Length: 102
Image (cartoon, rainbow, N blue to C red; front, side):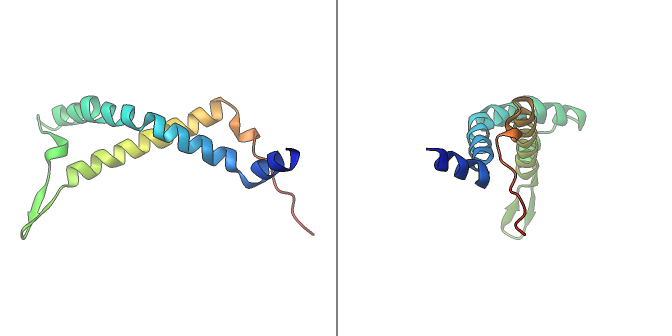
């Protein structure tokens, strides 16, 4: 068992697993926050527009830049949540630093 725990600590698997789990757990909440609170506030500030519906037409294609901006906002909030959650819980100490081989 000690060898397995050392492997997990040395390879940084704990940080990866925790980030993956937290990212999945908060993505729906953050998407709702962005869609139902942040986007309407941005739309209100910009003159009652719906950010997600913003697009322009290029030939027969519709380029939906508003939806892309919403996705970027989602990503930034999720990344910040994971980073600060990871730091608050002190989980960065779980990963064992590799010693340089001489």
